[in-house]
Length: 458
Image (tube, rainbow, N blue to C red; front, side, top):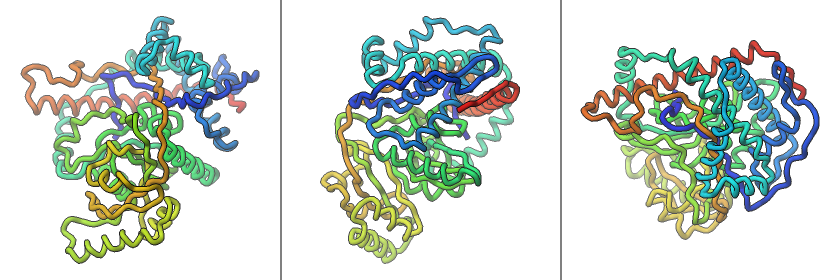
């Protein structure tokens, strides 16, 4: 199930490592694609790719660059189709709206539009490509609002069924997760596996999961940073359940082979049951700044609360014995395969870790295994692969594109006189309608692709 936020602006977030200025992308003359009677130039592709890369200090490999260019081209083709459809409906995005969106981006970054423009340029980013992105998202939001939103209706019976299903899952663990999905087939499976591994390495180096999801993921929730909201454990795919159980909030999984591709999962939060999970905010959780980021790994030996004490003691001993062989993060990965499990990894800060974990990590040296810790899912050990103190990230937020809320927008505050059950029913109706609208947008865009003349030259 994919949630789509209607009462807030959706956003395209790029973490730009501006402490490492990059040379501006070369201006290349040539056609990358033709979409009906309009062209996308090679320079357009280069500029958008540079926006995604954001002047990061590590250069992508040649294969990664080719993959990124293809993904960027697909995104630009979709934007052309969205703008053309908006034009067919006599929808126009005024320059003032673009300016407002750009100013909002600057405000989010604590600076003026002029200073923000200078910072982007120092990172080698052409600001026009961000304005183009803003224009396309505003236009598409208006198309969705006009053509699709009136078609979305949620019946009382659908709400009743959803409430019954929710009640049946009320006592299950709940996970707030995000995903990156890369589709593959027999012809490109190895290349996509390598791309998934490269994304995982980028996460270890501090890249934001939501940024990569927006730029690279092929799942319906990509535009929302990969966020798929709160799910009960039984709602997760069987191959994902054991992986998600081992994750701590703020950590990402290694690539997981799933049907038709590869997936990386990021755990934003978790709850023991659905009592508080349903109303928890679905906003992205950026890493706080001001203290070192720890690139961590975790290995968990599964254990249940009802296991006999001798069994628990034996598992603690096994976890402790790992310190003899796990001398760095790579060897911890190897040890995980021997346990028939995988390590979880991700950037974290000491202040964001649960207290029992923070206590063992506080004085832990790099590439040294922590003492075992009893966690929700078993016996866990942790290792710090590296640490760094990065500059404060610059986050670019594009202008609003979402359709109006499925019901009256009260800012998340129930209307006076609304009962608790009515509030839940309204929230469920909004969720169902949101999911339906996302699917309708996907079909709408797919139909536009199918009926358009598209010639790719890249």
